[in-house]
Amino acid sequence: MPTIPEIEAMLRRADLNVTRPRVAILSAVYRHPHADTNSIIGAARDDLGEVSHQTVYDGLRALTDAGLIRHIQPPGSVARYESRVGDNHHHIVCRSCGAIADVDCAVGDAPCMTASDDHGFVIEETEVVHRGLCPDCSTANVSTLTTSP
Amino acid sequence: MPTIPEIEAMLRRADLNVTRPRVAILSAVYRHPHADTNSIIGAARDDLGEVSHQTVYDGLRALTDAGLIRHIQPPGSVARYESRVGDNHHHIVCRSCGAIADVDCAVGDAPCMTASDDHGFVIEETEVVHRGLCPDCSTANVSTLTTSP
DNA sequence: TCGAAAACTTGAATGATTCCAGAAAAGGGG
DNA sequence: CCCCTTTTCTGGAATCATTCAAGTTTTCGA
Image 1: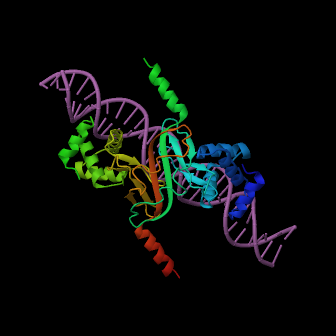
Image 2: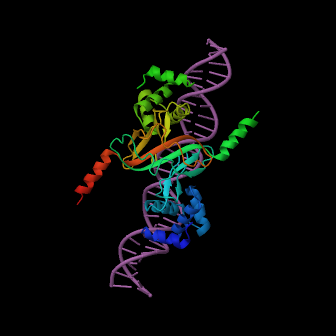
């Protein structure tokens, strides 16, 4: 969890002006992994009192373009952001409650980056999304099944 | 490419009523791989003359729930549908023009289905999306770079 | 053929994201 | 330290895929 000065240094290193909204946004993404835009807007407002949603959208875009955060778009969900970048990890999304967890692939560092036939495409990035049920929802389903008349 | 009677049989086998809109929708998905909803609405109207967009949305949902087609949601794109189901193939999306191609993974039948730590999740499905540049866009970029002043 | 269940139509609502134009603030050169 | 250019922020309105709702029509098994 980076401190405020560390966050400011990250912004400078990425050639981005250091502004209070950006610091709040980047800090919020670190503190709320996989948060959607609305949660980040809320977290930023907790820090700053007032920020327009447009500023948060712009800030998220700038941070994403700079590679400081990562933009993910789980199926059936709005855009989400996370601070883990550059370590080739993937995600598992609960199809019942939408919870998201990080997973590392079992097969080496760059799994599934090799397509058997790439059709001439230049592959730059690969995203793996697992879907299923989180622990809470799978147990909830079991109890529902066993207790329903 | 299934014939109309074959499509009707597929609908019956899936316990779905056979209606003209559904036949047109399923046929359109077969004829236009990776088409978005708008294209499918257009193709269905070519067949039927008039269909409401709501009917197409409903039909696509019914066909997806029945497992006859597959719903994919590429990052930065609207929903798309395809007729290849149940064969564990993945997709590559061009980040420049949005073109989509099918790819089979090089590593066995169920690649990357094994997470190193599943956090207690029950994994039901895994989607792999590669991003990069299609042949046209990558060569276009090269020529842009070499011809720009 | 008949009636219940499923599907279709029309029209409006929702909601995340983007566009726009003007005001304010950051950082570098003098 | 101050001015100027660039970047950022604000507030509001627009866009557009998708969904909701209510009423009518079609399908299909009995």
